[in-house]
Length: 440
Image (cartoon, rainbow, N blue to C red; front, top):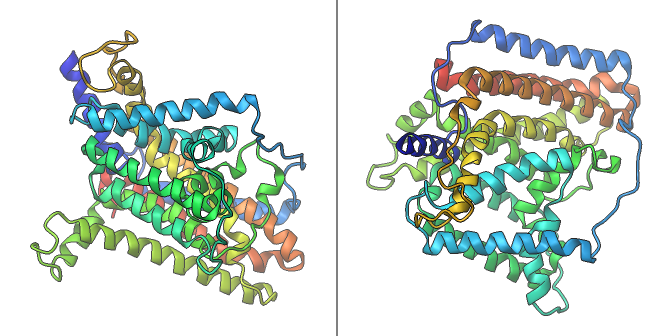
């Protein structure tokens, strides 16, 4: 039984660190092309419905934003973040080298990166309350007159860091070596504290801290989020690139585990010698960058086409970028939900033995994940509904934004982006299903 449990944990960790889709073959009850056609038709009907029903500019009433104040109520969550940061570092540096029995990889990739990204969509962005890095700076670093952030850089540093983080997650097997996880965490802690000391917490979190920005954008459509979070965002350099990175990194994750990637890898190694790239890391990084650039250029092109079709003469890429967040959330659910549910269960076990020393501190060390909670069929339907639903919500949001920006030419202002979303719907479903049915 114990060996079976360890096998399950190993299976789920492999897919948590690499492709987060399906771990087994599943024969769809209908041809894949039918599913894709139905999904595209559903999104198209949503677009037609928004034009007929005239969705109002504001989807929900505005309410006052209650910002977090440094009161006693914030001390508990802050100390909790500090505790788990210290525990993760201890486990990574002094725990077992077996990633299946060390708490650090599961804490970073499953609990924080996946778990918090799902939670902020439901409960709003609570990350500032528990963010250990900003509280570490607040408590340990003396205040100073911060330097002005160079506006020319905008959010490009955060965009680059998000792409690097995705490469470490998907291309480079960082999660398989807890010690490397610890070194990376130390490096990020030092960089964050120094950056907040240099430019101030506000500038750091708004331009460089890709973790905070990722959770902030994910939480913009939460029920608790203020209605102002759905307004066209203030333009910042690199803002569009960051949101596109939120989408493209997850799409690349799916591509990296499919048949198309094998063809791309074979093609690239005709030009790159095995001696230069023996492990495929260079090709992986090039592929990730190519996917991001392809989506970025495509979306920027859509913004310029919309400027022409709407007759406004303005670039629409910036104002409409908030409408892509539901798609980013949908891709996150489609690719990561199953791995979070399966591997997330092992968090209970690892809390009793975080260093892999055969402890049983909480009495849960012999508790193993139940792989039967989600099979390939359930995972497929969850992913299908999330992708279709995410694109439907994005179409409605784009219509709402266009109502505020160009109310007289709604059809012309929303058609280009809708066509792009229809193509994304089909592409994302093919990528998702490829490991199961060799769709591509």
